[in-house]
Amino acid sequence: MAEPVFSMEHVGKAFGEHTVLRDISLDVHPGEVVAIIGPSGGGKSTLLRCATTLEQIDAGSLRYGDLTVASTGSDGRVTYVKGDRLRQAKSRFGLVFQSYNLFPHMTVLRNIMDAPIAVQKRDRAEVEREARSLIEKMGLAGNEDKVPCQLSGGQQQRASIARALALNPDILFFDEPTSALDPELTGEVLKVIRQLAAEDITMIIVTHEMAFARDVADRVVFMDGGAIVEQGTPEQVLGAPQQERTRAFLARYSG
Image (cartoon, rainbow, N blue to C red; front, side, top):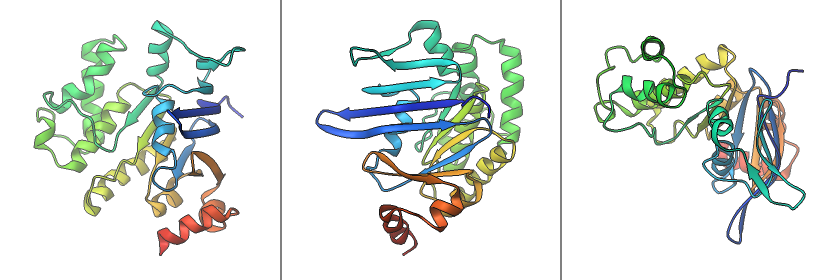
């Protein structure tokens, strides 16, 4: 099997006395779509924030392919790479937030072009060509010069997906990408993510959309209490869960 695109090993994270991640180990391989489900407060969003270096881990290691981002030394302290190596790591992933996080003063086109030019120092003309192609792919043609407040929620989320893809990342992270949207706009965004899955884009998706997880994910991870309780194929975890906590969560969901 190919080397994982992304790995966490024995990761722990606490905020003060409150432990939010407990001994998390997770490998994601090229082209794999992993859906993370579980109750609110179970650690799902914190896992994504640690994976994307928005929060620092307290224990364990974090790796993108052959690049170790954080590791625990013999003294028990976690050390992060810095400078060019950290920038290199950050260009290996894209993150799509539930609240879009577009720059409000920038047009759609500038939002998408900003990071490839500023972070990756790529050629402006080439970046613009790719950005316009992504705008077309996301069904946003004609909106290039609009600012976010002129777009619907679904359009803003599709623009933020285009922005994440503009870095040509090895993996995309989605944090509840449809939680702020009404059902019609949710359908728009899920259609785009389905299209990316069909193109073998590697993804981790934190979601509360069980039917979507069943349809699109190669693997479902159920988290509760800051730990991975159960993982497997959608058929295994959603159809025949082994753990009582998983069964109780799914019963509440379908009920």
